[in-house]
Amino acid sequence: MRITLVPTPIGNLEDISLRALRTLKEAHLIAAEDTRTSGKLLSHFEIKTPLTSLHMHNEHHKVQQILDKITNEDLHLAVISDAGTPGISDPGFLIVREAIKRGIFVETLPGATAFVPALVNSGFPCDSFVFEGFLPVKKGRQTRLQFLANETRTIIFYESPYKLLKTLEDLKGIYGEERQVSVSRELTKIHEETVRGSFDQVIQHYKNGIIKGEIVIVVSAQ
Image (cartoon, rainbow, N blue to C red; front, side, top):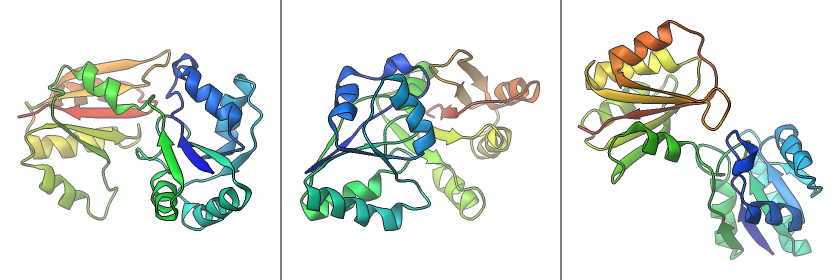
């Protein structure tokens, strides 16, 4: 019995590795964040491995069921999210933690995750950085921002298109309008875009158009 966390493409399907494809084909079972989304990916690569769901709304009670199954039946489980590496702002952490407690072998394949290309593409220092993921929507948001106010390293955030302008305004209030920021959108996809500049410049850019796609915000180091 063993578990393999398998990164999947964040956009361009050519970004999946040969090892990831082999693992998904050889596994006995795949735990997927959304079986409909993952089903399309698996169908594209003609992978017929059975799927089970493991997402933020069911993982607290589903993890034990899945671990019991792979233990009792001596199975190889592959874990994937909708895109990128499981556990990075996606389900995956809980099943890894519980598997380790049970003594189940866990491995993670290298592969796609959105914040790495966004960070490198920003032009900001990459030798030391902070990955924050998604900021709290309401409760704890200002507390978290104030905590990060004196951070001197490059900082990375994930954000949805619907909250991008609000988050940029909030960050500007913490770091000042002249602090440099890089916003990457639709990474690896047809309409990939990276906008760099001061907070005011980037905010103005996005005020003038429709915002779509998954977004990574990178704030420059002091």
